[in-house]
Amino acid sequence: MKYRIKVDEWEQRTRTPLLLLAACFALAYAVPVLAPDAPAWIHTACRAVEWAVWAAFAGDYATRLLLTPDRWAFVRRHPLDLLAVALPLIQPLRLVSTLLLGRRARNAPQITLTVYVAGSVVGLLMFGSLAVLQVERDAPDGNIRTIGDAVWWSFTTMTTVGYGDLAPTTGLGRLLAVGLMLSGIALLGVVTANIAAWFISRFERDNAEEMRQTALLEALTLEVAALRAEMADLARTSPSVAPKVPGPVSPTPP
Image 1 (cartoon, one colour):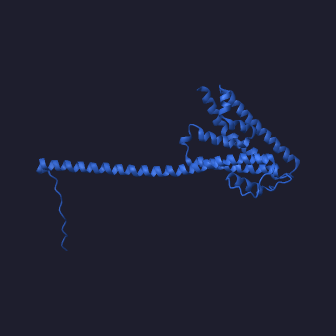
Image 2 (cartoon, helix red, strand yellow):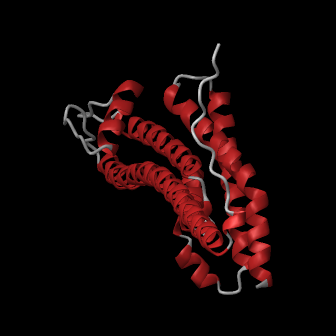
Image 3 (cartoon, one colour):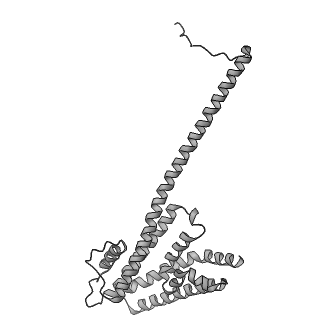
């Protein structure tokens, strides 16, 4: 139990810094792809940032692995953590997995969870666009030449529309397409499920409030009926203390 507390504390403290590092990695990865003709020092700086972020994620993974007694079980239960070492941009997906499968998932607000997963969808769309553009831009038979083409292809691939006007022609590009399809379907399914769960929870809360008010009215009705019966019994046993019921009020003459 003590090691579990240590791991939880470590993950809580490093979650935000690692997410910021993932954003830095995304920026360092995007600049060379979007600006291939940039000065050499910019490309060198971006590579340095990528290696620094990779080292930070590798250190985080190694630390949590050392804090866990059953290390093989940790590796099997956290595949996204291992992938985040190879590709830090996957870190938001790991956080989504932790949020969805963790013990606090049932108490997480549906709107917050949906917004977070939607942000991961945008990140996945960006990464898929940059990756396929880097792979396909110089392919002899490729037709994905600009970032606009790449974003359009990524969007149609993630939503499984697949118009066919743009498609990867290299083996690595097609492998990226498979990964984007599977990841996109999973994340978009999570977004849809959470939106539906939010509406259902709202309906359930409204229904519960209506049932509570109905129960209060029924209880009040029973109480009034009991009071009337008690007053009737009192009137039969003691006519002198029977309540006087006022008659109709006659209008006052002018």
